Image (cartoon, rainbow, N blue to C red):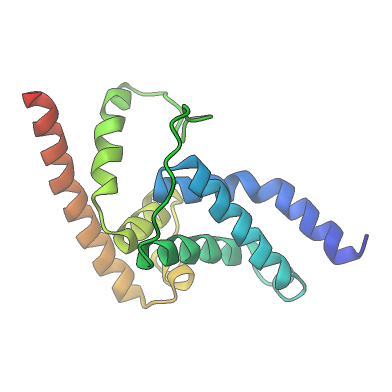
Length: 167
């Protein structure tokens, strides 16, 4: 096995779950998240000799995010599996666990680009500059998309929780 292939295999083994969970945080569909992560690693592999010596984590994050946004721009219709999810995104370790379904439902109402920014900024805890690099946009765009996304998320969350109280 070539040196780059071995390095890539090690990176893949160490980072695939991270890529899949990042994709899931954006799309909330494990099958789609798996596909996004796999496609991201296929793209990463084709650029591996160049990327390995820079920042492969940042490149992977960028590719996963771009693939997610591309699927949303194209309006691609996805199959919806009916089996139960294989695992949870977050560990249930606090009292707000009962709010999670409402929060997830509200997050699905946030436009894809704003959702991607929120996931990268809040879930992945990236800086404004890192998100701007991943999305290939300005830091001002990241800041405005974060503010708009949080506003949309708050409004959607209020609607979801009000609807669940009435039901």
